[in-house]
Length: 561
Image 1 (tube, rainbow, N blue to C red):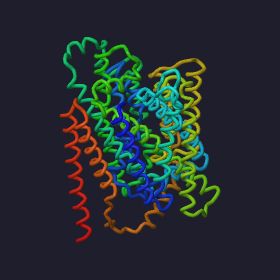
Image 2 (image 1 turned 135 degrees about the vertical axis):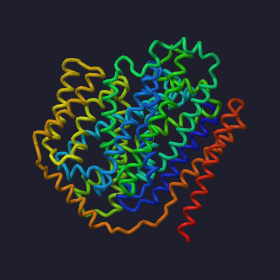
Image 3 (image 1 turned 180 degrees about the vertical axis):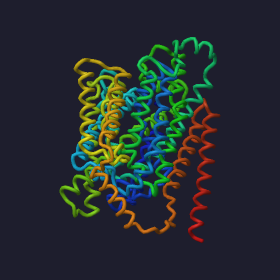
Image 4 (image 1 turned 90 degrees about the vertical axis):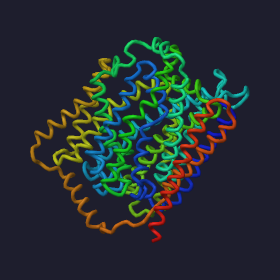
């Protein structure tokens, strides 16, 4: 990377910390720290949820699949969009209407302490694994871009580049710090900045890749047979059905997403949150996966996991590569910070406060929340350092999702709709699915996309259908507790219209767009290639920022009248 690349990357990281420090001023209690006080704008929550599903693994793992198999990588990622739209229609509003402060509070009421402990510790381990893989994937990209002089303490003697372990430590420390400082408001607002940077760079890479191809006939001849098929080898139609199912239960019940549904003001806004990121996932995968797909026709003999970054290097002007890495940093940071915040919130509110200090002050709980954030961050860094000894990132991600997500999330989400399901049913479904999956995968070495779907999706859902039918019209005590809590919240909350106007999120977006536009204008004068595209993107960002400024003036003028 050039000196301007490093400057842009440093500017981006500085921007993250500025947003975190400003956001920290909005934290007065643990509800502000972990649920934004229920005042988050739906569009910010939607963009944050969109970014939460991203990581460098999106580019490394799915970019590698796009390079090897082609169109199927786009189809797999579109499954998230279908799942999110279904989640918005069926689930998001119900979460918001419960009147709970954290997702764990629902589990405590609905399934008791056993359900809370089972879900918390199992999902925490699963998410630490997932975010550790994301950190590792980003570090793989980072070390490939940063050569260091001999004698530098951060240098890997074998490659001559930044050491992988140091890359993991540096990146992990940055994300832990800004999440500790600003809580969920910092996560939401930095996610908005990260969305802007990511979209800008991914769109620019795709446009430059398409413009840079001189002979499409030669490119197409270099592509393998079936490259434009919607399915490929282990990624068949049953796998795609299973992937939509897994994604639906993840979007509908994973705490990082539930947190965004309850952080907004109403059930209607919770639905719009899911609809926004679901709709975006139906068309943006084309932009992400197009570069490695095209690069397969240009250079068919590289490591698939490096396809995206090599494709980007082949077309990006000097200076934009720093933004490319900032975009991947953005994607991964969003995923990591979201999981750190949500599980730190659960440990603070539903374990520390509930079991140890029920009368703790708000300031004390905010302090404890930051300690938990740091502790969880150190744990995921440790796992990320060990990832190379676990096998391929793609294998780990798919195995975890197929064995854990639906067997554990399906009963929790089912209990949101069904009065019959209780803690015993959750345990039966979860442990039966886990056991069968482990026996087949590790005892008989039976695996594959279709087998994973049958074990991880069809089996637990079929068991829940059967349990519900056998139980008839019974009502679990946990259902009654949820209904009583909802009634109590309605009685406690006065129906007073909210006339306050908070323009803080809009200002963050406007300033972020302006900084990105100014960076592109500066780059216009410092590079000789791609100047037309750079100027075009800069002007577009500037016009959007001006539009947001006009909207802010309209919003504030209404409150002064």
